[in-house]
Length: 72
Image 1 (cartoon, rainbow, N blue to C red):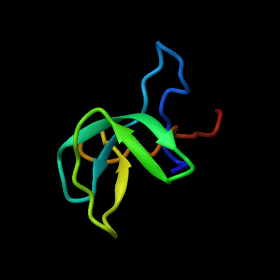
Image 2 (cartoon, rainbow, N blue to C red):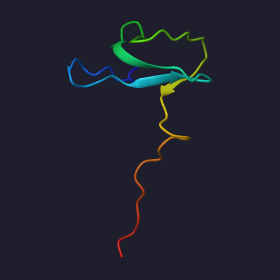
Image 3 (cartoon, rainbow, N blue to C red):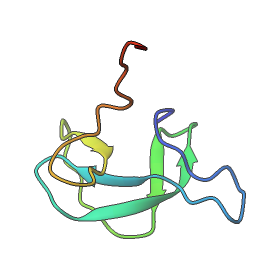
């Protein structure tokens, strides 16, 4: 659960948008409860044991990050 972010109580900062493996519905993380290893979401998602949970992907695939190139 430490992987997900809930906005840290800052009013202008949103929690992560997550999605379940094999699904297309997403939900925003409202609160991360470290004591119970659970997430409070703004939408209902039905999770099954062993099913992956990840950040949503914008576009057709994950963003690999910055592209580094040598200076000329």
